[in-house]
Length: 165
Image 1 (cartoon, rainbow, N blue to C red):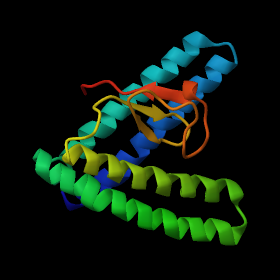
Image 2: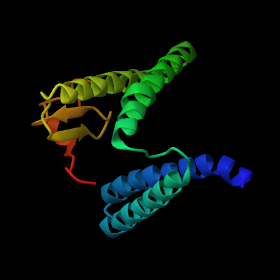
Image 3: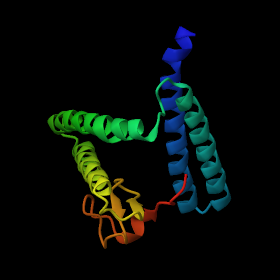
Image 4: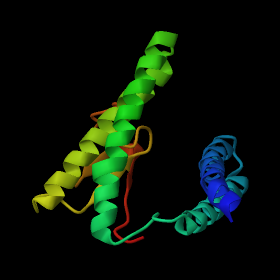
């Protein structure tokens, strides 16, 4: 059982990577004029995402009561992520990798702004309609902006977030 507990995070990470990679494969298949294959890639992505979710639930402490989940997401995970991205940003800059440095910089800003969204939601002043920039992950409230304030992607790169799971 001990080996299984060590293996679950690796399994989850691998399944999550496969899901996201399959979404990218779907985008490429559409670009290459193969919509039916794109649909299969999207189905594969959803399948792997569900499998990953199933194993995530099996890891102890993965999902708790909402108040605990809020503390974990906004009080720990985002802050740890920002710190990690800052470290990686420094490494990328030192290595001369402008693309990675830009990505890490965007991620820092996206996570910082997401924490602000939660603060406004806690104060009761946040709109419940969200859309996400499909390039950098920035979360917009209400109508998407003309251009993403983090990565400058145009409005059409924003995807509405459904209100239910």
